[in-house]
Image (cartoon, rainbow, N blue to C red; front, side, top):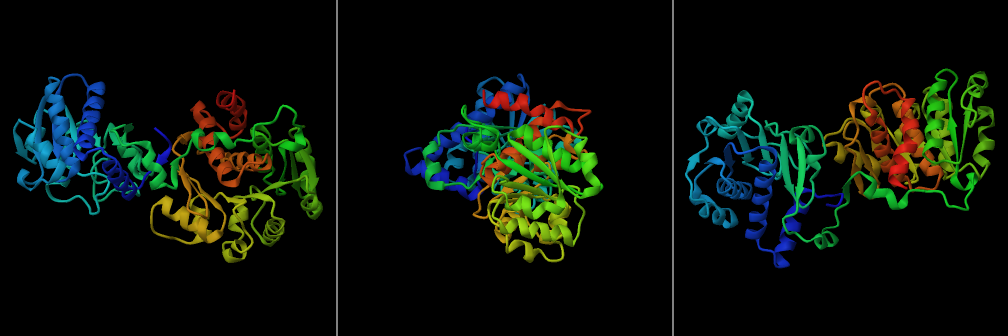
Length: 481
């Protein structure tokens, strides 16, 4: 399956286009139910299964699951929310093919069950779960029953990942054709368990018409744009990153520069106040050091084609002035940490000089200081912020979103908890800045940096920020042999 992520509306359109192209709705529903039954059989041996069906197409999938499992020798009980006579279309057709008992939805169906199939509501649910459906979710949790969810766990909003009232914790979720945002955004991602994307016969060609602007971040998104060095290249062809450092937190700039060099920048220079120069010169021998008093000269040097400003710099007017001066050169730039907080009182001053050659990398607190508090999912907030700023926005978190001003976005889902350590954000800024210095487009550099950052943290417990750049050679070698 490709990395494309479809909204609920886009998935409905993909279904419709497949039907227009000759794939019947009954075929799609039969294939969907078969895929769920197959996933359950792979995870659980012969057992007693309670299949909970809703009144729409998700319930129709459930009828197929029940039939397929019973044919495979599983003991199946099926319960329906509502009356079977009210089912319509393909769901009604699938219900007619089920020759077992159809019970009313109640906790009785859970008696002696080993596994529950949640086919109550799909990703398009627009209201909180209530009544007997909510009672069933609570009872499943009380009994500790494993759940296999059809499309999404009922109660999870497919577009935002938010929980509408309540939702069961699934061990496996089987969705169809492509993932939806709710499979990747928290808390939905955590409730889905392992997500399996099943091919149910929708041709990939429908994507050309749907044109989804969202993808799950990974090498498939940016591998072809990665700035791998040419055989006849040289260090200057790989770019020269300038990292603005501060007088006290000198480690931040050093982490940025080391990450940038590891990821592919040909050269890196840290420009810092005079009192920090001795400490910086005692650091990595491959990183150059310059007096920040020469900042204008550094900006005027065309060979120095990218900058990272913010980590360890200190919030204030001096940093604001340097950010504005750098932005006016049109050079590629990453603004992180203090560079963002320095504009909390005057964000418009910053936004008017930015372009899509700039990446902003706020965490939630910095995001709120710069863009204010706003409603919506992380995806919606990042997209609005990117459009407002006119720059690429990477909203950091366990479900990091990278958004372009034109609406394109990726959701990054590979960040482990070990990244919650001092300096890891500085390393991320350095990875992105290094890729931009090497010539990678800002949006794809931010996406690649976010994924590589998560992959580098895969070494697990005991990780500190200094370990992250050292993992890059292994990861990059595997990606680009």
